[in-house]
Length: 138
Image (cartoon, rainbow, N blue to C red; front, side):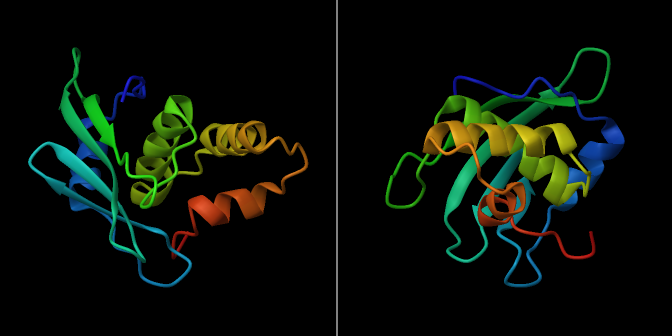
């Protein structure tokens, strides 16, 4: 991926990220697991891997994404561009794994989706649910 999130996750957040997240019902769209320093983000229904993010220690503490890849097979995942994939990768980690509100990221998702579709009247809840799903217990 040519664009990566700028966020630095704290050591405590990294510990939580390392625990991953498993979809518990049909409304959840992501399974996330970690092997070593790599976070894998798969679609829950198909099992297809979409994102792989390699984390590294950040200067001053915490962890940041040092490199990442996105699925390039259009039959498995239809990318809407680098900016979208960068945002989605951070959003899955923040909203799904960590359970954060991620309000700015969610707004960015709706904006990028509207821009890509050419439709300015997309309901935010529909956009979010279609690609992000709901996190059980949130």
